[in-house]
Amino acid sequence: MMPPAEKILLSETLEKGLGILNLFNEYRYGLKLIEISKELGINKTSIYRYLNTYCKLGYLRKDPHTKLFKLGPRTLALAYSFIQGSDLVGIIKPIVDRAYLKYRVHIDVGLLHEDSIYALYRRENKDTLNFRHFTRGRGLHFLASGKAVLAFLPEAEQLSLIKLPLEKKTPKTIVEKTHLLHELKKTKERGYSKNNEEFLPGLIALGAPLVNYHTSRVQGAVSFDASTSRYTMEKFERDYAAAVIELAKEISTVLPAS
Image (cartoon, rainbow, N blue to C red; front, top):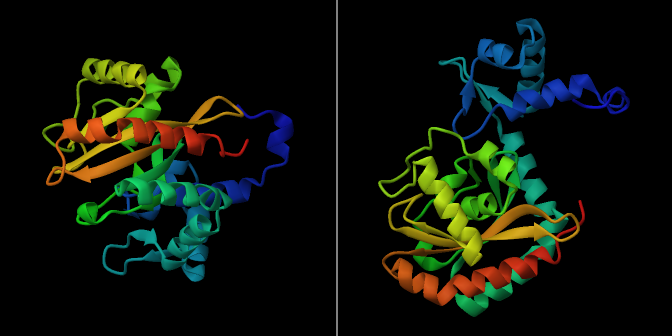
């Protein structure tokens, strides 16, 4: 629970308004007024005022046929501006770009927030352009970056982020908890994670954790991705495992304290 002194300094109105936007994601791209009201425990009259304001400003839009509220173009523009204007992107971009020129492999950098990995910066390679790469991955167990993060978290936090039942994205996705925990143990021992077509058929990946050296906290992960038309998992691991670990360490050294 938040200390009383900190609570006094918060704007509850703004907190409630942002809580509405936080409900929307790739699994819930449209919501009805009553659903939002029940989810947040706020009466429908108050929710309607928030929604009407958001629609007027372009942050949300209302589908005239389904009556569902969906994210509007101004929300997308704001998110894009945050990414493009982030000083963190400016810090890691030259590091990732140099690594790409050296290895010529798709590179993703993702940050952990609550139970999701958000793509911060990516350098695409031609053999992976046909895959739709994540911007947000709620199922950490089927991403190389997600498994890299999970493996290096404290045990209690790790277990809290393993949401059962585990979603089966492909026939190769690990969906048994004991199997996943065993894989995470091996990941920590070798220093990198493997994703053998567990997220998308034909896509393999290696991941390594980003550790904030100021706080000793796992903050995200970097991953190398490739197509099975170009590599087997064994060859990809042999050629790039050491490289993805080295890149993760280099990025970790420049992560800001907060």
